[in-house]
Amino acid sequence: SHSSFCFALAIFTPNPLGRKEGTWSEAQFCCWFQICIEGNIASGKTTCLEYFAKTNNIEVLPEPVSKWRNLRGHNLLGLMYEDVSRWAITLQSYVQLTMLEQHTLPLTAPIRMMERSIYSAKYIFVENHYRSCRMPAVDYEVLSQWFQWIISNVKIQIDLIVYLQTSPEACYKRLRNRCREEEQIVPLEYLVAIHQLYEDWLINHTLFTIPAPVLVIPADHDLQKMLKRYEKNWERILSPSRGPVTCSQ
Ligand SMILES: Nc1ncnc2c1ncn2[C@@H]1O[C@H](COP(=O)(O)OP(=O)(O)OP(=O)(O)O)[C@@H](O)[C@H]1O
Ligand SMILES: Nc1nc(=O)c2ncn([C@H]3C[C@H](O)[C@@H](CO)O3)c2[nH]1
Image 1 (cartoon, rainbow, N blue to C red):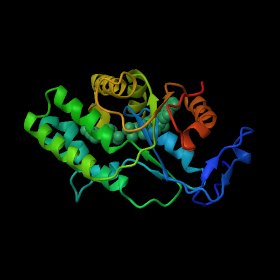
Image 2: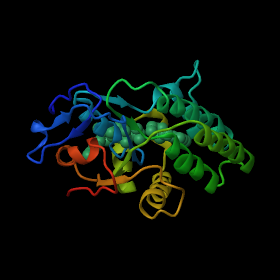
Image 3: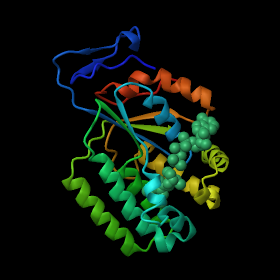
Image 4: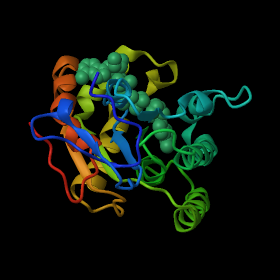
């Protein structure tokens, strides 16, 4: 695992020789550093989180999928995949609440790494339901009013977005291998639509505002190569950045 962070309110200054010698500069107050891992379904976000979860003093928050699959006995994720027009607003309303809960949880470490965000729930998934005419306009408007109120009235800190950029085909192959029951009926076309919205949001900047600098990591590679990529980008991901960041190949 990587060098252990001293649990201090300070800026971590990675030593150019490599993180082993990285030290916390004392007496500098650190604004907690929050990272969101974004990407298509089965793009490898959970695997990325598991890699960084081994680093001391990083708090990792996976997507609360278990809540969406069992809310007092109701499987909202399953309902949505079975009948999206009927159940999309039900799931999205609960996704928006559970993501807001995660964004506003008290921090337990100098760095927080979250899987996705309240932004991608709205800008990617709600937007896709609406644009594919599977969500009535009235449902979209109600969700949008809630979303706008939340981001205008609640402080949601995101300092970096890591975008695991994949091809829909690679995600489809992994999704089929993973065999999450509710997703077995997900067609490739759905992943293509989600991919295009992510590209328009985080690459083309033609969708909605981007709440933080974006680090793009091509993520179609095999597991071993991806773990090496995370190793190479360790400092870029974990040290507070002051401007746009670029991925090292
Ligand atoms: N680089 C990779 N190459 C091949 N398979 C991978 C790779 N990364 C992850 N996988 C596998 O693909 C599946 C999806 O990976 P993972 O759960 O990390 O994706 P995810 O982005 O968290 O998915 P979701 O958006 O559904 O939460 C898992 O079965 C995982 O073992
Ligand atoms: N409809 C919908 N809205 C969301 O905000 C959302 N966020 C994630 N997901 C789906 C993708 C994976 O199947 C599974 C795990 O990511 O949950 C979502 N589905």
